[in-house]
Image 1 (cartoon, rainbow, N blue to C red):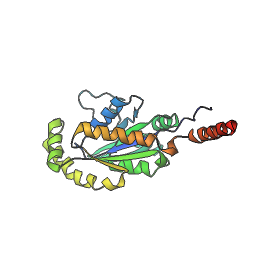
Image 2: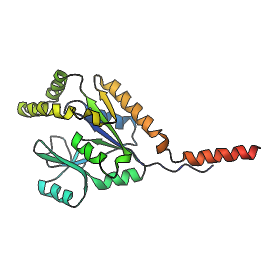
Image 3: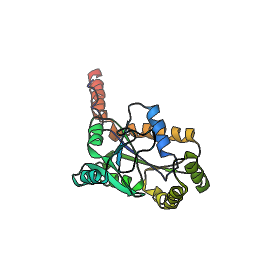
Image 4: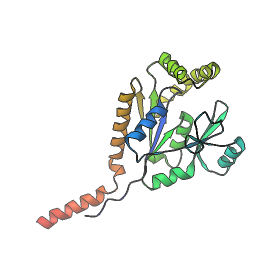
Length: 216
């Protein structure tokens, strides 16, 4: 029988309000399946302690970032809390053309831009909800990364972010990280098994029919 044709990669969009757990879950999903690629975003914000250029983010000046946007090098971009964030187009298109699945840890604005792009058919979008607003603020404070003013701004913005949950293919409530991780694994497994993502099926069924004919 002929070998199945390689499928295109899936663009896995994870979005949530800050503190709901999308970055942690993205990391767990990649630890579960090391064939996954992570779409490293570009940003104009300053690196935090321990962050490295090209690992957590591509750290760029505002001028450099705006030049990338003007030259069509960004798949999506947005301004969040006075900083620009975006996904470089080249590495993403290269990955999915090679059949590698790519995770995006982005907000609803970036997710919307990708879903409205020429790559929309490759997208699986997942929104992560917190179990409560009290728990959301608790998680933000436990990170010890932001000032009280920044936390207040993130909490204020979270209501608008949550309002976009219905635009996504899936919506998970992150009450427990282990449960949410298992649900993400199930979603990815099911999406990979969709008939439309198994290009070798037509060839396989044709070969099966030929075997039937050979037996008669």
